[in-house]
Image (cartoon, rainbow, N blue to C red):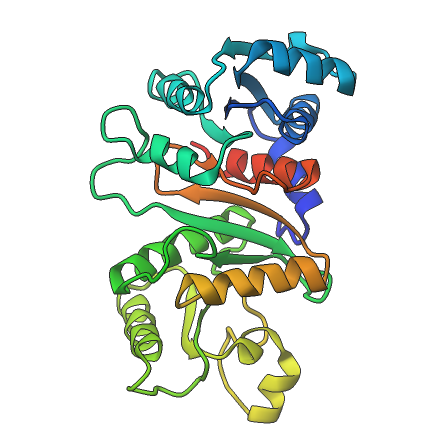
Length: 300
């Protein structure tokens, strides 16, 4: 099955064994609504770590049965994040989720050397799956939120996770575009040099993906631009994955999709012991539910 929408992603995950989710500082309504929806869909069983009184009050206001969750009381956000990581490390969860705490506190808990979730020398990166009404299928992109200026090795790791995610959607050999400002090998632009090296290495190692770079965005996603420029590549105009050269490029692309085209998305961190849902505190319950489904699909 080749899934092309986030609703199809949810249906795919529903057909698989349930995963165990731990939500760190799950005090806010959007987190509770998203987790509740995922539980009702049979995607996860959930443990909520946070202020029990606040969680109970919000569940009451939302008409959510609190008894469907396991509650671990911790009223301080940083302690809730640490306790959530402890639960994962103790084998009591397959997915971590950010609730009502800032991203920096969430990341510090994951990266903590004693109680966190990052193996030694791991590269933690953000993977976003975007359903854009202007595109004919899902786009898996990175990194738009965590690594400011990835070096060559980090880009190769990001590419690995993008391809793994696309493969989980049923795409046997995903088409990955290494995005720069041009399809030409401009030696004075480091992103072009990195892209050429990564594409050649993917070919040399027989990576289970079509990898093209350097590649401009229009050639990655627009068949008309491909025809006009007469660019020949299996990736051109039909990319499944976009690897961006830096966080500014990726973040602007992501926000253009959501703000101009009202795209929907799911997002997670990869590289930790388990997938970690990382969405904005202001994201909708629907976005957070899609992110849970995405993490459940990628969880072992």
